[in-house]
Length: 371
Image (cartoon, rainbow, N blue to C red; front, top):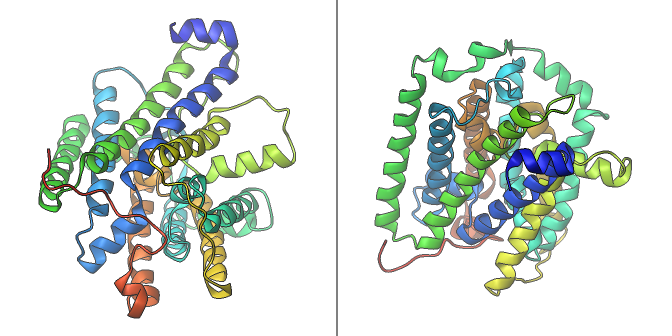
């Protein structure tokens, strides 16, 4: 059944929500299997460790970039009107928000998407931290924290259009963007061979990257095909805004039309739950004590405010935004890496924590040979 037929039969809103559920399910399933996690990738890189998490992140990053840019180059989609490129952006918000998000994901031991995946497999720390993250994000958008977000975002802004497009700013163009992604994919393949990362690691991470490109293609296709007034926004995966939306829908506006974001969050949760159930990894895990709970909650608040200020989370900016080369997303991604690396060095890089950098997480599957 074609997309046009689906839109004619069900309407734009249900089709978008259904697409969000389907793409979210794929992301959640393979993020759980590959142990996709930006926090762990940063820790491995900054400590010079070789556990496979950096390799997994690089596969997801490079595949998201290559697939998205390839679809654009082939004329399969046009993302020029996406908010990340077309709207006015904030470099100050990207930098400061990214730093705060990076600090928060170290304290909460996972970014917003990783918390959702862990919650689905029974991690009670994430079950508590996730809603706190969503509350902080909503408060940063329309609530008590909104004036702080707006003030920070107003310090240094950039016009939409070519001024936010790194392929234009740097002169890379589409061929240069594809070559850039190919270089990082080659690096990921080399590291995967050296670290003997099993297929669930590199192939699962590649599926995560393809989910990003699929979301761009799907929402762009709906926007181009739908005949309804008010075309659907062109977007990919992110978890700051969608988490806040799900929270507000549950509490205040359950009767509003469904959206892609509204389908995304439960889709990711369901996908991660199915993956954990199929492979016997459903397990209840709680807090070690009061100090641990305080750390997680502070981290969740910093991620909620930081992600909303930056205009994206580790997935929204680090994969989705980076894949379309928007300058603010790249500033956010770099700031997240910096904030996370410094926080890990100051807070965790000593004693018991240094010996167990993936505490509360799971190791990447390894094999004797990379095939």
